[in-house]
Image 1 (cartoon, rainbow, N blue to C red):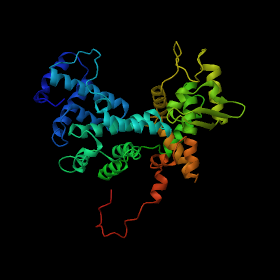
Image 2: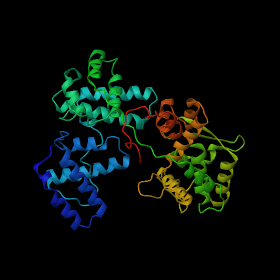
Image 3: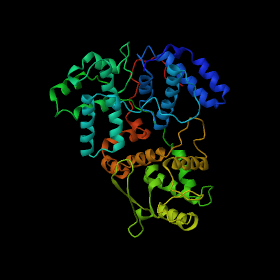
Image 4: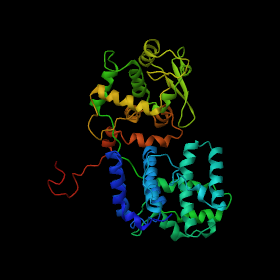
Length: 409
């Protein structure tokens, strides 16, 4: 559905939400998106709210994607149907995937990728992400009047990735997913697929600036986790030791069961939630003792076999988000990372575990195996936080003709 002229009259929407008692932060998010849409609608050739949603959701967390879906659903109802928010659950107007809008020919392309992906052992959540990107591309081609792959042109392909100014509006990760969808169809129509693959532009993959634990922060966390008289509960301390010394994912801690612990062989064996592969972790005396103390002293009496349970009835298993809250308590107890903008999630421990092994010259394949990665290349983003070794790769600028004072701080 195309943007209507009412999109310039969002002041009424904001005023209504303020009068109706919507939270300040909720209204602020709406205003932020209105400003973004007004500045980028023409530049990024946004014609529909679905277009805007697709661009804004790229490379975002599931939490942010949910927010954008809600916000653009509000815009669409207000713009097209003169309907104001009512706080009642509604069928989302902004769909998560464009797949259901594709014609039979384009759906077959996506279906073949899904079939191939499952045969190759891809997780459903991974397949879902690739399907979303591929479906958006094919829907854009369909909206331009192309009903089959044979009709797709280089000009329309490039227009999908770039704005009017020729600057890319999507990055290499997005292109990589579309590329994978088409490669799965090489056997069905090789010449056509090869032609479309040649149309895809060369785009640089985005790299995040990764926050990492400094040596001082590592020392303070280590000292605090080793202190039996710290402010942490036994559950938080056991989780903290698992995160710090094994690099295990928070979602795997949440789903860990009592039967996963082999006390006789000092091993923890579990199936990873993200990859579906089995992971074996060495159970050190420090971690084992902390878990044992939690089970015998603090863990609620329950028939549930999950290792870590909530502290109030009905003593349900923890969700992955709960592990994130506990990691924040660990940072607080250690007196670190309390400034606005400081990252305080569980992944910091995983990065630290990887870099600490790298500093000891442990081979990449072994580090990747200990982290439970399916492919060794997955380790690249973790080692981007290995500041010590990255500094060793830095080039001196002493021999460059730069005037005095330029690099002085």
